[in-house]
Amino acid sequence: MGVRDAYFEDLVTRVLTRELRIVNRHLPYKRVSLCDLEKMDIPYIVLRDGTAHLIDPRELEYLTNLLGKDKCKLLLPIIIEARQSLGEGTYIVRDRVAKRVIAEILGVEYEEEKPLIIYRPHLYKIREVLPTTTTIIFSPT
Amino acid sequence: MSSLIRVRPTKIELIRLKRRRELARKVYRILRERLTILVNEFMTRIRRAYHIRKEINRDILDVYNEAAYLLGLYGGSIYEYYDSTAVENSKVVIGFENIMGVKSYTAMMKKGKFINTYPELNEFRERSIMLISRIIELGRIEQSIKTLGVEINKTKRRVNALEYIFIPRLTSTIKYLQMKFEEREREEKARLKRVKSMLEKHRG
View 1 (cartoon, each protein chain N blue to C red):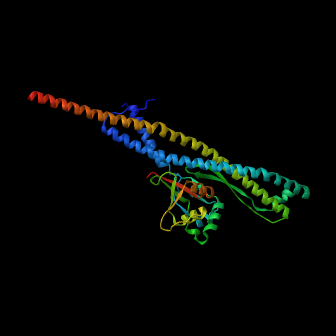
View 2 (view 1 turned 135 degrees about the vertical axis):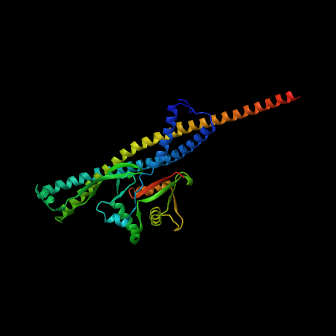
View 3 (view 1 turned 90 degrees about the vertical axis):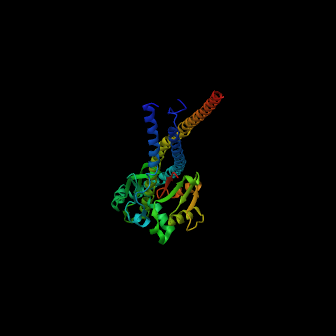
């Protein structure tokens, strides 16, 4: 194997590893509660890549109406996990209050102790209703 | 383009290639998932942009007619009066929106505060603010469509490169190395057998 080939192969491996690393850079640096976001003049969340992600106040209003007095317990953005081990097109929601929000939107039942498993059409529906307050995390395992 | 990667035929290299293939498959699965979601986001936004554009086209004429009506009723000074009744002007906030790692410009309107005046003027103000906020939303969605389109193209290229070039090439190289090792093993066995028979002949 020539030096050039070895360099190329190493480069490809590095690029692949980097791809895995950067695929989740849209996750928040720190999640913020719905109450705190409502208090902000312009609601935003700081992401891992350093950008400030603006949140639509109409979505906050919608979530407030949906949750009522539990609104301060909800941390935003709602994280939906795409786990490879579950198979393609299957997603998990682990957060307790977020599970309630998602179940209300989809009109499905959920169990308090178990994570809520949703499928791709459900995800599309959720993203349509809450485009700025939900985010998807890609897990390679 | 060769379908094999030039590597030294060693076991270490085979292990390294297998690891690389596993990594490539992981990345491929994640990127494909991301691509599917991005395409869906793109389609949703296109549908939404279409509806908003339709609504704007419908509302813009009504607002224009209403403005002409107010002008006819109260005269040219109505717009100065309109301006003077604003306690706090409406603002447009520009920032970023991150859609699955795609950074796109976004804007949102913060409605100002106004003094209540004539009912017609109030209604006109409400409708015009609504129209402007819709136009801003349309701009935001169209901007995100553009950025998503570019990202979809990039991701698609990566997914295709992994699916049709990188993973098959790794697979064929691994297969080639495995065949080579098997052949070596067979040769080794044959050689041992020959040596054994020669030794037996020599002894006999």
